[in-house]
Length: 573
Image (cartoon, rainbow, N blue to C red; front, side, top):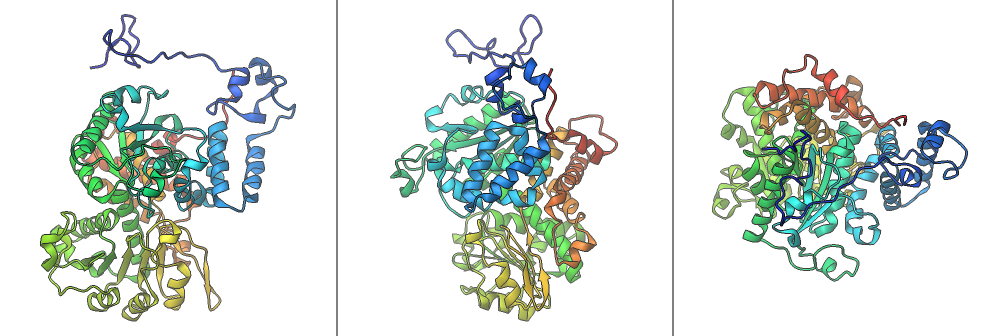
C-alpha cells in the first residue's frame, strides 16, 4: 500500500515508510540555470537557446552569440559523425551526445535511423561491449552486483527518475554472439532503451537500463586491469536465484504491477527459467526468445506472398537450438496451430532443429535440455548439415547458432536445388557471427534466394539486378510491443500478443518492398510501424482482459501516436 504524508503528497522516495534505523536518499529538486543547465542533458539545447532564454536562465557569456535551430544542429552533427571511419568512434560520439543533449541525440537518431541504427545497436554495440572498460566515461543505468544483495530496493531508489515504465536488464553472460562479457554488457540495455525511445516513442525518463553483475567466467576480462565489474567467477545456483528474486521483487515493490521488465542476453538456461518463473507474476518479456520469434514470424508471413502457400505447407530447419531458435520455432507452431485449428504438438512436426551435436531426434531425448525436447522427432541421427538439408528438404533455413559461416556453399546450394525460391535467414549477430553473408546467399543461389539477416548487409547486384537483403532486426518489434503494453496498462504478456505484433509488422510490407524482394518494410517508417504494432498488441491485451487502462481508446493507432515522445526542443519560461 502506498504511504502518504499528512499533507496528501505521495511518499515517492520512501522517507515516510523508513524506520529510524533505515537509510533514506537526500533528494533535492531545484530549477536548473546557468552553467548547471548547460550540463543537464535533459534540458540542454546548446546553441538553440533563444535570446530570451539566455537572459532568463543566466546563460549570457556561457554560449557563443549565434542562435541556431535544432535542424541545423542535426545537420552539423551528422556531418561530424560521417567523418569518423571507425564505427566504434561513431558509437562513442553518439553516447557523448546522449550524455550532453538528450533531445538532440534522439532527433539525430530518428532523422537518420537507417544510418545510425547499426551505430547505436548491432553490430557496433557488440564491439562497444567488448571494449566497454576502455571507452567507459560516464556511468549509464544502474549496476546491481552481489555486493548489493539485501539492499536492491535501496539501490533502485538511488535512481533519480521514479516514474519508470520499462527496464531492460542483462547479466552479461551471452552478449549477442560474443559470449560472457560480464558487467560490460551494459551497452545492450543502454542501446535497447535508446531504441525504445527513438523507435517506439517511450519517454527517456521512463526507461531504466540495468546490469546485474554476478561475476564473469571470461578469463581475459578477469585479467584486464580496465575491467569495470566484479573480479570473480560467476555466481550460480541458489546465490544467483536469490539475487534475481530479490531484484524482481524490489522492481515490483518500487515501480508497481505495470512495470515492463525486458530480459536481455541471459544464457540459455537462465533465460528460459526466468521467463517461466516470472511470466505469471510480472510483466516480463525476453527479446531473445520472444522478440526474435515475433520479428522472424513476421518475415515468414510476408515471404509467403513471394513463394506462395501457407505456413503449414512449409518445412523449417533451424541451425541453433538455444533461446532464439526454440523461441521462433514455438511461435511458428503456435501460428500454424491458430491458422489451421490443429494441435500445437502436430504443428511442431514440420519444424526441425539442429544443435552442436546434429539433428535433434527422439533417440537423443534423454540427454536433451528441457526446452529442446518438444523438437525431438522420429528420424535417424544426422550430424552433417548438408545431409540434414537433403534429407529433411526444408523450404526455410534459419540460422540462430551464433557461429559465423555455418551456411557453407554446399548447404546453400542444397537449399537452392530443393527449392525454386529458398528462404534463408542468417540471424546471428554481430555481422562476424552471421551464418553467411548476403553476397554469398545471392551468388550461390543465382539470385533466387529470399534472404534476411540479423545484422545489416549492403545490396548485392547479380546479372544487372539489384537485390536488397532484409534485416530481421528485433528493433522492428520490441519498441512498438513495449509501447502497446505501456499505453494499455497491460499486466501480463500473452503469446497471442506476440502473434498480433508479427501480423502488424507483416502488414506494413508494401507492394514496392515485395518487388525488391524485401520481406520487411524500410526502417525509415519505423515510428509509423511501431504505432501500428502498439495498437495491435494493445487491442489483443484488451481482448484478453489483461489491459487496465479503461475505457479502451476508440482509435488505438491514433492513441499510440499521441503517446509517443518527440524530441523537439521545448521553450523555457
